[in-house]
Length: 97
Length: 485
Image 1 (cartoon, rainbow over the protein chains, first blue to last red):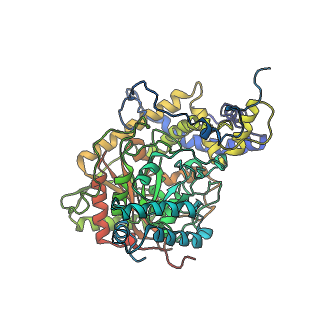
Image 2 (cartoon, each protein chain N blue to C red):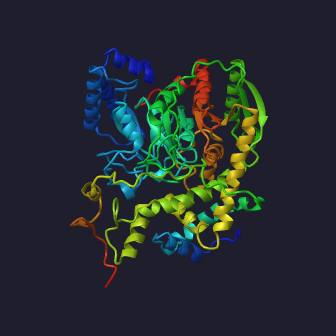
Image 3 (cartoon, rainbow over the protein chains, first blue to last red):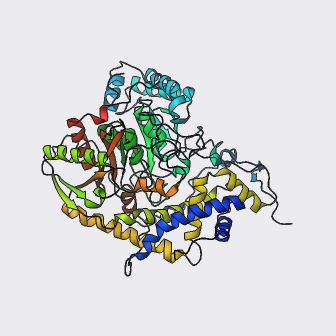
């Protein structure tokens, strides 16, 4: 499990995370991530057979609310902080030719 | 201002010895004088602060004041604050003016407490030294060559330097308690679910919890009364009866059983910190407490577990920062995908990029069971250790951090070394338990030492009782750094 990450692994992870990374950064990141995964590896020796995973601090269930409209239309306020907007639409590079 | 405790300030306001505007102006003046050397605030807006203070004065004049109306407070820059720049310490949000208020901000506004500004923090709350902020490191008011801790470093530093009478913080793995310890103030992370996370920019949602930071436990109790309460906008907010957290402050400690986890006094703990914590234990015994040795056998696994779970949740939460709806967008890009990748590479700092990558990896196909699921199972073992310990004791006591403040730059190139700072604080987050830090001494360099209390679920009033009784018998919390310019 604690097989060290290669530079290609680091680039693949960066790709998964949608973070551009160049060779020099990948190299620096590789060493740091491997040190962190060495720390994490101490976890692997623990026997957790039969232990239920704990996803949350409190055993609570998702609340349901009435299916009513409670929000007001604030799109102008929310879009005022967007990098590029036109006619109430967020502008991004063309994705369909 | 001699006595700047929240109750003293509130009494002066109620007696009309000072107006909220005058009080706010005094703090704004001190911020203007000290912030250039401490860098505790990212945003200060005197006009907005004074307008809020004028509203508070109107409430007081109309006889509609609450217990803290007119007392100003500083807010961590992780809380969305309507009309205020809200950066989360990141270039990604360097231009983000929040279009709404976080629930915590709504509550302080409703209490009539003017905001003194937005405090500096580690980027997206990821850090233990406040050095990862895009807006520069915060400096420790006790020695400006040292870090204040993090991630709520600006909050801790501004309270320590008396630039604000109180501040809000958030704590995912120790981000209220560790900077409180390193800056010599009191800070409390409540039971998970007591304070709404609505409008609090998310890091690791199953761990994040907001809490108060102030000089004393009594101040924290008053602030907790404002901050807690059910909020339908947070799906994990707990529906509970509202409590008065000041109700037990004056109870004697006779018969209190204090649990001392042997793992928190083992190798890796600085000698001066150990001595100060042991002296605090002796003080509590004089006040009527008894001690019992306990074991949190799996607490040594808390850091590895945390560095799987928190990055996993962060990689999901921070996927929203893509240059489309708010914040930074890369100036040049070819395709949509290229825009995402460049925006995120340029908008996030190195530590945030690292944690997102750890998270993406541990959640990726083929690794989920070995990392994420295994971490969640050990999280339960850690929580179970606490449940067992609380059968033998009423409260758990130990150091907040393994050492005192370290020099700026000393650990910033070594992530693993930095992560070890949160050795004693992370277990409470994983279990969802309340924890607090209070000052209990100084090391030979004059840097503050923090004492940590961890209570059972919803035992904040008891923790505050213990802390208040300790602070009545000692004056560590009343000391402030001298000679600040």
